[in-house]
Image 1: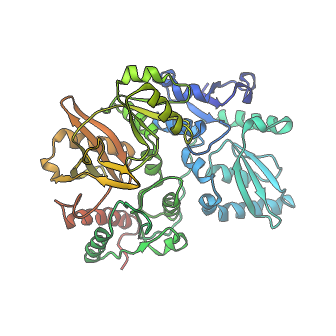
Image 2 (image 1 turned 120 degrees about the horizontal axis):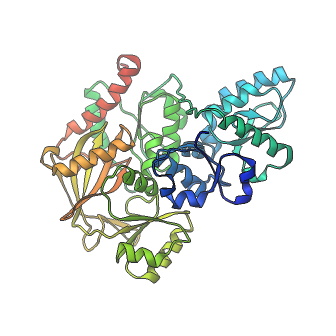
Image 3 (image 1 turned 30 degrees about the vertical axis):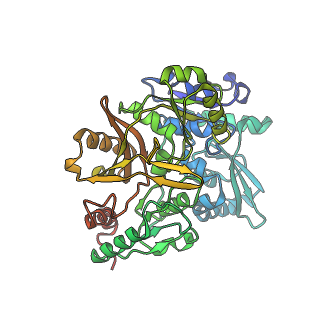
Amino acid sequence: MSDWLILVDYAGDLGQDETPHKVLKVTDYLTKPRLFAGRRPNIINLARSYGYQSEGYYASLLAEARAHRVAPAVQNMVELSRKSLYEPALPELNAALARDAEAAGGVPSTIIVAFGRADAEGFKRFSKLLFDWFRVPVLEVKIDEDGQIEKIRPVSVHTLKGERRAFFLEAMDAHTARSWAPQKTRAIARWSLAVLVDPKEEKPPSDASSLKRLASVASREGVEVEPIGPNDLASLAEYDALFIRATTAIDNFTYRFARRAEQEGMPVIDDTQSMIRCTNKVYLKELLEKANLPAPKTEILDEDSDLAGVMERLGSPVVLKAPDGSFSRQVHKVARLAELKETARALFKDTALIIAQEYMPTTFDWRVGVLAGEPLFASQYKMAKGHWQIIKHEGGKMTEGGFSTFAVAEAPPEVIDIAVRAARLIGDGLYGIDIKQNDDGVFIIEINDNPNLETDVEGAILKDELWKKIIAWFAARLEARIGHLPG
């Protein structure tokens, strides 16, 4: 029998007597990774919620970090969280729905699809296509009076009763009787180029003067650069590729733009997979451990964790982090147990898991830029004056320390080597690896999918060559797709 593992929130959601496969609580999967040492199970995540930063979300995120095959993937969870994200799938799905409805003599107001099977007779092609798009165990499809899809949402298994539960169990048995099939990669033929910026952003990853420099360099390379904003999603297909220069998050407009770019078959920095992986420190912690890359001692905490034991193991002070903070936000240094408990309680209001990390003081952090698996720049970001981080938040203001940028060949080889190895775990895009260096060695603090690129800082050594390398990354992918650049 293949190694299938079913995750549930509560024992009553799916009884062990209802499936021949192992049923495990989500919390055990999250907190006991040693149970799976040397195994690569096929995981069906039946958590009651797939919401952002819920335990169900983290189960799939960590499954990906552990190289376990999981359904649903985090990408599907994110896409189904709002209609604007799964909208690119609707034309094809509605067409399949109409074909099946014509043969069936009509369409019901609701269809339940479990593992690619519909609970309504005659909708085999539609249900299979839906499962190809969104590898989610159970989906409910609401259909409007015109026979068009109104809404798609995941269904929690504990709500399925009677005939619907029997239908689900039969579909799951049939699905697990087959070997694991990866989700199809979908790309639409059209693609384009644009630079996505947020005019309202206080601290963007590239300032206006740097983007003007990018446009000037690109023009000499035969590439037209145009800025677009958060409200320009509808015009994205007018361009040939997408370069995101607004701070990324999977719950804001940057993810929607990246996902649409991928659906259009466009080369994009940052891609959605990199966003999902890099914006969450819980995922990165497991990924680095699995790859045996050095990092500060780190623990993943839930609300039941023994906080006193955390200080005993990690020392004092301890650094607490929200999984998806940026620009040093939601990062706290705490020295006393009472302070640790109070800060953790506040962080748990927004997330099921948080990060505790040993405090590792240094006078600067290395930031190594890596593009397509090769080092691009090496900068030292110095701590803000009178502060333990490179950015100090106080009174609604951000204060930064200074910087020094080095030629890659002049930076410590061990720093460059560890940065490149870390970036290659994520993908072949653009990444910024934050590293601390002390007498004990080098330690990875973070992998950023959206690193700063400014002509006078990260480009202080490369100058225009920095932007040429970025343009070359896009050009290589465009040429691979059509054989030449437009223009």
